[in-house]
Every structure is written in C-alpha cells, then in structure tokens.
Image (cartoon, rainbow, N blue to C red):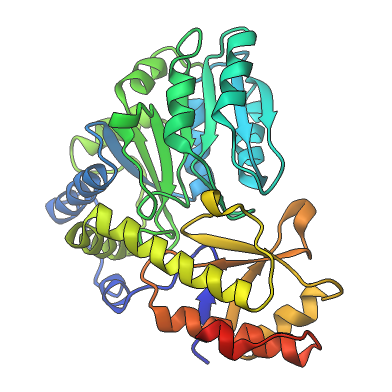
Amino acid sequence: MEQNLRVPGPTPLPAAVREAQAGSMVDHRGSEFAEMLRELSSGIASLIATDGRVLLLTGSGTGALEASIVNTCSPGDRVLSVSIGAFGERYAQIAEAFGASVERLSFEWGEAADPERLASHLSEAAPYHAVLLTHNETSTGVANPLRELVEVARGAPGEPLVLVDGISGLGAIPFEMDAWGVDLVTSASQKAWMGSPGIAIIAVGDRAWAAGENARMPRFYWDLSEAAGWAEKGQTPWTPAVSVLYGLRVGVRLLTEEGPEATWARHARTAAQAQSGLEALGMRLVAAPEHRSATVTAAWLPDGLDWSPFNAAMRARGLVIAGGQGKWAGRILRMGHMGQVAPREIADALAVLGDTLVELGVRTDPVSAVR
C-alpha cells in the first residue's frame, strides 16, 4: 500500500529525488563529488540568505545540534536555552552533556517564546555566552517569532552568540540568516529540503567561526574547522552519504527554481488547508493562529479517544501521522505538511482521519473537512 506519509519528517520524496538516489557511486575524493558538494553548499546558502559557510556532514539533525554546541562553547560557559517544547529541551540537554552551564527560559508547551520576556530575562541576568533558540517546534506545532527573538538576543549584555535549531523550519518558513543576525543555524536533509535522512546541515557566520577558535569542548567527528578545511577541496572529512546527497541536490534545485518567497507561501497555504480541515472535524488545534507552524500542525485528541487503536486504524488505511511526544504522548496528533505536498494529499489525509474517527464513535463530518 502506498502510504500517505504525514509526519514531521522524514518527508515524502519527489519522484526526481528517488530517481537521483538510485545513481551509481562516485569517488568522494573526486571532481564529480566536489562539484556536487559545492553546488549544494552554495544553493542552501542562497536559500537561507547567508554569506557564511554551509557545511554538509553525514548524520542526523541532532548531530548538527551537537556540532553547533561543541564548536562554539567551552565547559562552564553560561548558555541560555529558550525552550517551547521537546526539541528545545533536547538542545539544552546537549549543551549540558558537554559541560555548559545551562539556564532555561521555558514557555508552556503550545506557546511561542515571548520576545519581551526574553528581553527582561537577559537584562536582569549576568551575560551569557550563547542563546539557544528553536525556529519551529515540531513537538507542539508552534513557530517562534524568530526574527524578534534574535534581535533581542543580539542586543543583550555581552552580545551572546545566537544559535538556532532550524531543522524543521529552514526551506519552508521565512528565514534570512545574515539580515536577522543569526550566528549559526542547523538543519537536516529529511525535512523541507525533500531529501532522505542522513545529511546534517550547518550554516556558520563570522561570529560563530571566531568563537570556534576558543571553544574547548571535545569534538572529533563534528569538528567544523576540520570539515571546513576539507570543504575547500570539495570533500568531507569522513565518508559521506553519497546517495542522500544525490537526492538532496535535486531537492535544493527544486526549491531554487521555485524561489524562497514562493516556497514560504506554498507551505503557508498547505498548512492553512490542513488546519481548516482539522478544525472542520471538530479538533482543537494546539497553537494560537498567529504562531501555527507551516510545516506541522498539532491537534488535541477528542476526549476519550485512545491514540493506539486510532493510530492503528489510520495506518491500516494507509495514513501515517505522528502522535505526541514526552508529556503529550497519547494526547495529541501531529500532521506534517512540509516539502512537496499537494492539496489532494491533505484532503485524502483528512478523509481517512475523519472516517476513522467516525468508526471509533466520534461524531464528525469528514465530507465537510475535505471540502
């Protein structure tokens, strides 16, 4: 059965990406690979509006988060984690694991971070070495007002570094690295870039590079100075996931042809379709309208509905959506709509979701949701 994969990643692959990934291997120390790596790095840099270095390493988005910490911080550095959900907490845990002195400015799950509250905290606290921000929190379906948060953080005492988890936002939600003052941002191939899992994406600005000269956290595989040296030669320091890069190159080309503004608008339209359909089914969305993510929508399960049989029944019909994480496990569903998603795929998902609710005794109108 062909699945309608509506999770927050990995995303469904366009046919051209799948075809590209079936290509023959090349020498990852040769000219063909060098040409591909440079095209990808420059293409991603253009799409996120940065003159900084973009490095591609084999690994997950979490690996990219680890790299962002260990290449900019030293044990004992004061780090502020601005957390709005499970992935904001993960970023803080990574920094703690390597010895940073982490403080948390946590907001209720389902809410966006408040720039004014961040400004107040930063003005009252001792200076921080770095501030960790989340672009888009997939555990709750909330997109942060990132530009405003970055502006506040950059203006704080001590001018802390601004490190951003952009894993589920880049390529789908407005983002301009240099204009906004982001020092480092991470992403991953399997999200809006429309590639398979396996490539960690790290964009590094001048201030973050300078911080790396004094950073003393242990690193080997994730040493960005090592990666940058090899990138100058069109190579990666360690064996790369060549097939994933083949597909990622196609994804980046598709986004480049579309243009960032058109891509952002398309994701906003798709999100609106999913959100209006879920509300028509009688489901209550987690995020306030002004902070709803354009890549994943979270909704509360109807009272008394058990997630496990609900999920199993949808999967039996070919629909795969995500459940809640952490303290929200079994309480919400999360519908992904990033990458190349057609309105028909959203409509089909709503039809299956609605029919399954009816089967399980929930009064709702799938036809209205699809319409």
